[in-house]
Image (cartoon, rainbow, N blue to C red; front, side, top):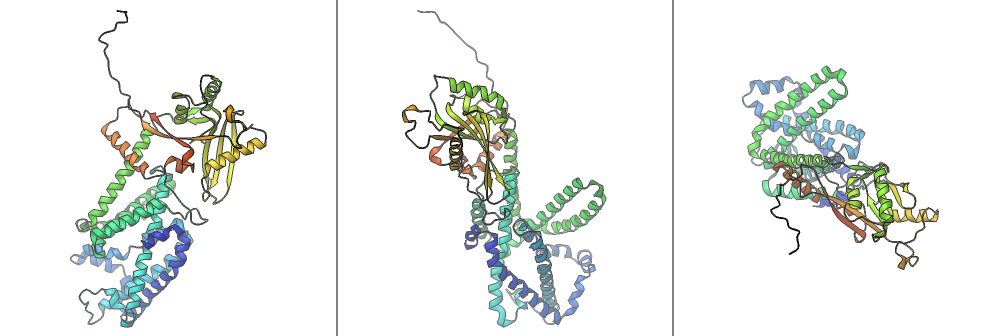
Length: 509
């Protein structure tokens, strides 16, 4: 719980605290390896790859031993999962040092096991057998600390994965914080507490770390095979002229990883089922959400602004319509003043027409720089309608209501607006005129026929949406000044019912 609680302070702050501990830990691993290799240097013959071949081909059960040996390779994937937070140069330097020290330690363990008269006592591990008696308390403390700290790379790696999933439209918007000036270092509160809950649940299910080895080993082998396939496909697509070279390289990788995967398949019944269950569940949710987004794209997303302008003028000139407010603000996904979201168009005109003194269509764009707020105002109708694009640094707070009001005051000072309220009874009585913000949510229209699969997609979509930011929070709006409106959309075939009129009589009796 402490580990997850400190995530909000960022990778840089955590690294300063954890880095020295890990340096001591790996140095300690190297020291233990060296003193044991010195006692039995013949273990260095393990660098000969023939021994691996001999184990698999000629030793009975040797192939399945690889399933246990594979745990020695895990940890590398955690290092690379932290890439976005630490940078490639830090990882390259760290990897050379840490990998060397790990290999030395494993050789030291092997040297100890091959030494004359060595017997492993009940409930004793090879690692702690390497440790001199006087250093055992220190070894336990530093190993426990390193185990906890090693989780850090996976936690920050999941933050990165979810951030990419959001950008790829595979998950809804979540609250993302940037603890440092580096855009790659992020903190996602929902994911942090979800991971903590999941960790506690796993502890309660498996109870002992030894029971989780099968789950972890299978997860890593599947992850490595997937990574090789995806990386291979990417390189084949990007560099088609080098196709034979990449096919040769990845055939070697996939052969080695395939052998490890096959040797780990026996772990499915010993805890590996949990890995597969989680993977299937997460994939199903992501797939259904993606298909729901495809359904959403079946509707026309935007309306040309040249169609909107005459309707706005007509609504403002309609004497029978009361004013809704002086300034009506709609957040929009449109990146250009030449078009408007279909949902905004529906809200403005397809229900009761919304009459306002000034219409504002607001688009927000996040910059790669940490600080800075820039904006541009495009005139759609002079003194009646404007398209505003706000560009915010990724660390800037989304104080959209404050910003749009400040833009309006600036335009008043420049003489581009009068600043008068549309309500005569209070006009010039207050320093600032009223604003209303309208945030839109789409809902499937009731007259649309959905297949059972489409209904499942819609339910998954709503579940994913429930985990994310509410629209008002996403745009940084004051909830007391926001109207949330639901817009019906047609994403599939409309319902058609035949109706027969039995009797009609308009005569007077």
